[in-house]
Image (cartoon, rainbow, N blue to C red):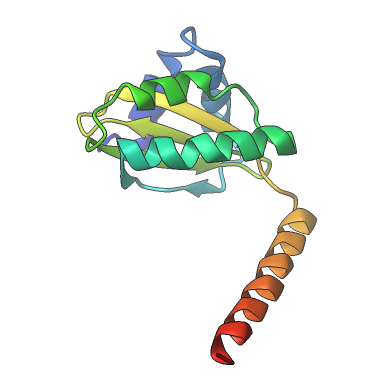
Length: 141
């Protein structure tokens, strides 16, 4: 697995390819990194399915920091059962997900504006309220 510095250099080397790489490089270069996920795995099929939906919802919410088109196209070109590595890096206000092959080939980056603490509180309360109501309905049957 790539070290953090190797990941920064890899994304930097792709900055001219697409805006998404420039945006993720800016996050990686920030002095404000709060979260760095070491690397989880996901199939190309699952990544494409999940991030196609998230693409729509983040566009509607105005939360994207750059187009996801390049990353989605690259994910669609991979074999569906290929296992990818997903690295997530966040600052106080932005989050980037970086897709890599098992051999550390950079596939794509996506970036979003993070929810504010207030937005996150409202979202959490909505889920708690609706999930508790759903669980209560199931318990009574």
